[in-house]
Length: 197
Length: 197
Image (cartoon, helix red, strand yellow):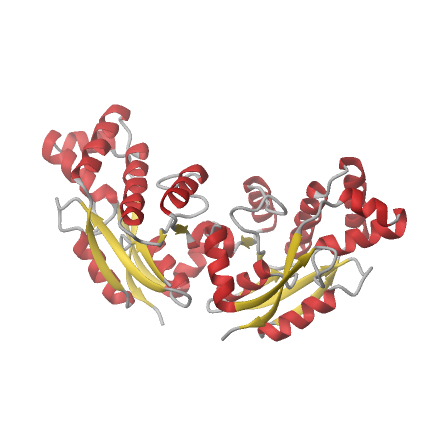
């Protein structure tokens, strides 16, 4: 069974890939609006982990909806959730029967709600798998330490292909760096640099 | 890392064992109040699947609390949830650092609430893992068909070591078979009979 796993190169999507690997034919998928080359770091991470990797271009209307939401809210949570929902929908609309993501039980963003999940599954006849939904943070961290070496840094300093990277880029281009600092709270992100065998 | 997985011999706890197998040292645990030999069918299923198996005697006060709740409610949901919560608590209280169960995203019973899970994790410094929480029913069934042959039947006809078996037994002993039919709704259960390699 083939599963398309949304992949940023971070520890959560990387660990999800490992958990699915023994049971599925796993393809890692990185979405892009084509504004940056951020997907390249995900491509390198996928090769290092030993998985097939595909880059998927998302329609720009998703980016427009997302930036409008971000400017309206003054905070990125809903905008990032919106992009994630639409990214999953894009994959299932285009025929993916099994789509997976790396959201964890304790996540708020960009975790799909139960209603969103059921809506996607019923409307498109697909399944959404979230391997880390059964693991709380300490168990995730124990597995991450066992299987990876990771690099952690401020989210604007890390070479990673999550939705935030391109949304920051478009805000910087249109409104300047000050606006990026205003809209995005400081938080640390991780990137996987080695798979321990 | 050793994980103790609560195990009935049904498809959900069996599939959970398979999903954990590549990453953990999995021990299957079947709880009993010592009233029936139902644990034997779980023991046989564990051997057939190729896992270590341990039978754990639960204190009778849990059974007393459960039967009181069942008679009060006239319906088994809360009583079964109560036993499950106390079974997980019994394992973590007695030193298990990682405890797993086979509850699914779509389950209502005996799925722990987020608050119950956090309470158990924080109070005892343990982790509760629920491998199927990231899978909705169609994905679970696809994996079950891939990895198992199962037998399905009415829950009172199936040889399985879930909490219901012993609770039914004690109600039958104390109040007769009519009371069992009154308290437990008809539903089908499954038992794994073969692991496809």
